Amino acid sequence: MHIDWNAFTPGSALGGGALIGLSAVLLALFNGRIAGISGILGGLLQRPSSDTGWRAAFILGLLGASWAYVMVAPMPAAVVQASDTSLVVAGLLVGVGTRYGAGCTSGHGVCGLSRLSPRSLVATAAFMAAGFLTVYVLRHLLAGA
Image (cartoon, rainbow, N blue to C red; front, top):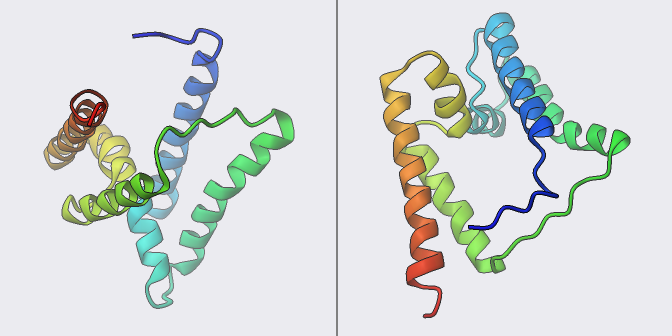
């Protein structure tokens, strides 16, 4: 294992995590909702309802955060070591898993675990294990295939 110490940025990681936690707490306190991104986006894509406004504002905030970041610092370079096909398949599998798991990493991993939800603990353990296993299989077992 190799650590690129020049790219190691614990300050920004801590700041980002704190902002994610703060946004989840504020949404729960002021709106009584869980900050599960898949549920927020899914509700926004359904027929218009009385809660469309806050959902749209939340998604726009997510998208606007990267724009705001670029105003104060350069965006870090992104290196993707996968084909377009792999990315599409991975995205579809994540979407299917989100539906079967009744939530995503933000809903279960951030909000559910902080509420000590046993269901979220199982879901988070399952998608973390699936991620570890997928990386192992693709990088070590199928790397030469």
